Length: 307
Image (cartoon, rainbow, N blue to C red; front, side, top):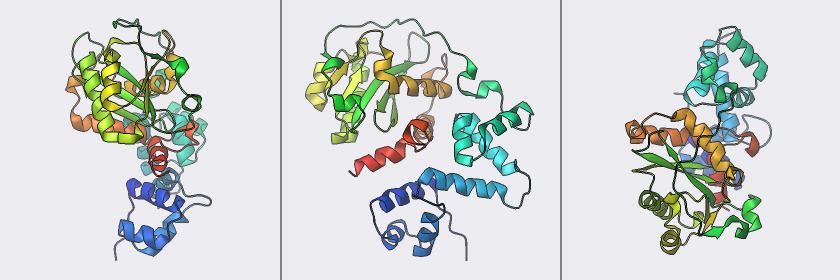
């Protein structure tokens, strides 16, 4: 009889349904696995079941199988993929594989991992903020009027929005939407950095999320000039941050820095395929974040949808 292999997506479903107190038999029937498989999975680790921790435990045990050394071939491959392909930080990798981050640094210094300093976030360098070249306007609802519960991240459905360019004055851009509570990121292609393109993207997002899109916090870039039309057609109020105050959209700014690791400045966005953009969205939302107690944005967002 073959071995049952659960995917990460299966584990997210198990975590969600188990948290909702559904029976093991219900979860097994829902996913099409045996009750024994679900029982063993839920009891894989001590304590509350977490999809990311369970998936990592599975991958680490695979990497250690049949080997005596700590840095096995499979573990080496796993660490390199997380850092080079999925753009994880060393701290993120160290937490989920349960190895001291200094150990991973030592392996890099010793040349045991095919990882260079350029593969690491920010490369240890703080870059000067680029000069703003967009047009702007001064109307709209101020962030000072935004309800306190949004600022406190106590409720879901409140997003921040921005645009990311390829570094060229013309050509495509992407719109980035980040949910404040879960840090879920949604990256959408734009034909340009103009109000028509952004309005289309926001209305599309509102259609996809429905009642799960409650507000947007943005800056005064000209791409948000159609805020009245957006509020009228989508029923979503827009709050405008103060000028030169990126910290008021801190989630968006942080996620944009991570996005830049996948789309470096100067790379034409129109050369990125739709499949690659979908993959980038997946990578952004499946990385465990310290601010979420090492859960992933997709886990938190999906859980909030059910409550």
